[in-house]
Length: 390
Ligand code: SOE
Figure 1 (cartoon, helix red, strand yellow):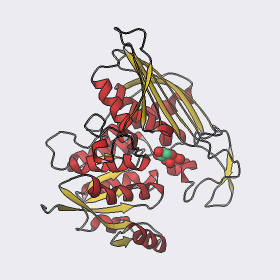
Figure 2: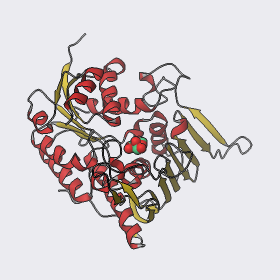
Figure 3: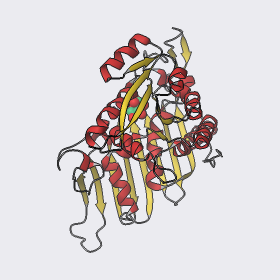
Figure 4: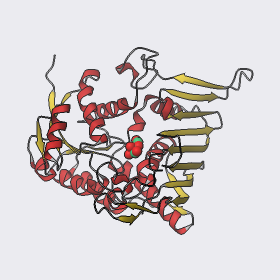
């Protein structure tokens, strides 16, 4: 067996995302034949005891408590940012300046200005960079992309997408601190727009091209919550719910909705796209299926919706040749494994932008999120800005 080059990873943050990424780093070599062998070199977090416990559970060789020290280390090739949104900017810029490859959780940054600086720095340093918009790598979603590229839907007229949750309905839930920083606008940047709609937008622009204008409304249902850090009731400034209309550059129309107050829904990410010749629909709760309506012109009697079980491994269904046998599903965690495999595969590639979605793609999503929040504030349609990051 040819020896593989080591790829030494330094992870920052050990929350939910730190776990999904660590799982990907560990599983990739078992299922994908890559030129590099990922090595879990270090995990970095401020709480040393917890970082050590995480390191021993996931197999990290060492622990750091200061991310600057991690970036200074010569034995680290990749910095993976799985820390809250308010630190993405500073860490990513330092990592780019140190010449590290960078993986970053979504959303890219707190705002477009930060995102522009991040794009500028990674492009100047020419370091591989990618953002964990993992849903692109669910095989059924990747299959949707293939089918759209094959022209099976014809001219696209409509796109609709939801991301519905219910975990913040409880008015006693505090804001801020570990696990709940997503409710604190200073740390998260925004609420459901940056956390959930950003996923819907990333997939939408990947499948259907750029969005040019939006008209949005947002609501903060619970106006005050105790802050975990101060113990005092403070104003809540994130958006609890957001809905917006959008126009794509290709002329199609869209409607997006996200909330953390849809009782009964935990992570209901759905999308549907309608074209002249067919439609596609997908639902995260049934993630291995892609619903397809083929407007078969030749056979009016049998045309209708069909449910594709995306598990064939003969090259028909993206990524599935790496997993089990036809009929056997894979799940949420595999989207991260598939994405990390693509990231490593992009190393040394001659392609101009081998690691998609890269920081520039994520900045495009950030621009749309910002236009959505601006529109909700002003009550007017808002044009999506052109990326300024040169
Ligand atoms: C929030 O609940 C969350 O965990 C997001 O932060 C993730 O990005 C999303 O995939 C699932 O929901």
